[in-house]
Length: 313
Image (tube, rainbow, N blue to C red; front, side, top):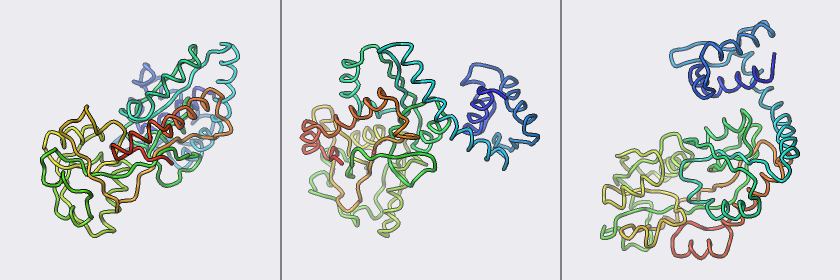
């Protein structure tokens, strides 16, 4: 068995599909299958079972995937450090996160980091949920994941960076726009724009609504927070969302964000396989993002636009 066999098998377990991994690796499905078959010959056991929606690891496959994930952490760290030695003051930092995270949380840090390390490459991989970020991080090849913090995940360390209060996003002129705050009962029977299914933020909101005995109606579903904000600003519905930096001001003249203080804050931040194993470059970037989120300017902006309260993508 080879290191490539192990990496490909872990990727197949994450994706649940041989064809999806083949597309990602720009190879044939047969080539991906050969990696898996080589491992099955070595172990003498079936590692994958097929079902209607793709493939899933068998009991033996689960054991092997866990061992691969744990083992690749040290191997990847060593290979990255060797790469940095070869490149001198160059290197790379690989981050997985949601589609809009860089704009909302990282833009200032990216500029600062590139000024400090002009030869270092920043590589971003987009995922559609914190769960997907965890899976991508576990497979290997990535340094950091910016996620919405939730329940603990085996083999992953989570570190909070920013607390995001919740707001009701409405169009200026809406009867609720002039409210100083929104009470839970104001949401009873309200027609809301649904946050992404399967996201940590949606789970957090649903749990609070259930515990509060509130039963809103979710209409249009969206793929990300920015789309929810756009629809609310166009007057196509109301959206309960975590308040993000930059949503209030000249860029959104028709948008109002009304605080919902009864809804516990959402925390965003970093996830890694091991903080102690992070390369100096990855740690420097993580610190730059945390620093930009806690900078006085960010806090001042948050005072005008609910959302940038300092304390986790």
